[in-house]
Each structure stands twice: as structure tokens, then as C-alpha cells.
Length: 176
Ligand SMILES: Cc1cc2nc3c(=O)[nH]c(=O)nc-3n(C[C@H](O)[C@H](O)[C@H](O)COP(=O)(O)O)c2cc1C
Image (tube, rainbow, N blue to C red; front, side):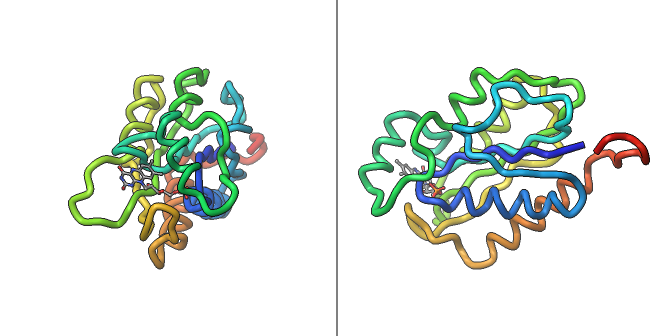
């Protein structure tokens, strides 16, 4: 059973978290992190878990307008240059019955800051009929372009490891 981490990221913070989650998952299952523009339109039969993450924009998943605003603020090249996870999830085809999922986001570390892209992602996955293996997670950045708060990369790695531990073990002889 393999895991696929699909991420959207403007400035690189969510990508860093996605890579750490994939690293944690890799301790137990085969896992890779892919930018949403390269993510498959259909989840293959070899995938047992999809983990989907993006930056929180205007309290939820990004939209064309918020991505444009991010591009205007960027001081370097953008990571995601096309559609975001909102658009990818809108057309995703999944073998929902046997697939597990988890959602994450990055957002600004400000007390009482409402909104979370991960909650929106989790809602979309639920409506696709995909079972959540755990609650959505937020990882914190200090400002719009980052950096991540100290310790968040390690927390993401550990979260990935825990997600993998929640998957059914692959029986000997069964393809992983
Ligand atoms: C247009 C725009 C809107 C944003 N809105 C929010 C928000 O509502 N809440 C929040 O916590 N962070 C917000 N942010 C900050 C992003 O969450 C932050 O840029 C992101 O976590 C960085 O991740 P990235 O480097 O992967 O893009 C916003 C950023 C942009 C560019």
C-alpha cells in the first residue's frame, strides 16, 4: 500500500511540510510528495492513503484571485503556478471505498486567526466518500511568505509517521 502526498504551495512552506510528511510516511510505506499540478486526475489502485495540503488563503483553500495576490507579494519564484488543490479535488476520481485520507494546511501563527484550508480540504474529501484517517492538521508560518515556526517540519514528519501507522499492514507476499 502506497501513500501519495499532494500539495499546493506559493512560497515553499507547504511544500516543505509535504516533503516532511512524505518522509515520515516513508518509514512504513512507499510515499511521495507531488505538486498539485503534477498530481494524477485519478488515484490508482496501488494508493491506500492520500494526504492533501495547501496554504490557507482568505480563511480557506486558495482561489485564482488569492493566488494572484500571492504572486504579487512574492519576492521569489512561486512553487505552484497553476490550479490549486481546490480545483484538483473538484475533478478528482478516487476508488473511495478503500482509500484513506488526511488533510493539512499552513497558516499564520496568530491567535484567534479564523479559517483553515485543511478543513475545506477535509470536507471535499469527505464528500468524495473518502474516509479520513485522522483530524486535519495545521502547520504554522510566521508571516505570509514564512518561514515556518520552529519545530513544524519535525512535527510534520512525526504526523506522517503516525498516519502510516494507522494504515492496515501489508500482508507478506502482497504487493506494497
Ligand atoms: C492572498 C493570501 C491570503 C491569506 N489568507 C490567510 C488567512 O486567511 N489565514 C492565514 O492564517 N493565513 C493566510 N495567508 C497566509 C498563508 O497561509 C501563507 O502565505 C502560507 O501558509 C504560506 O505557505 P506557502 O509558502 O506554501 O504558500 C494568506 C496568504 C495570502 C497570499
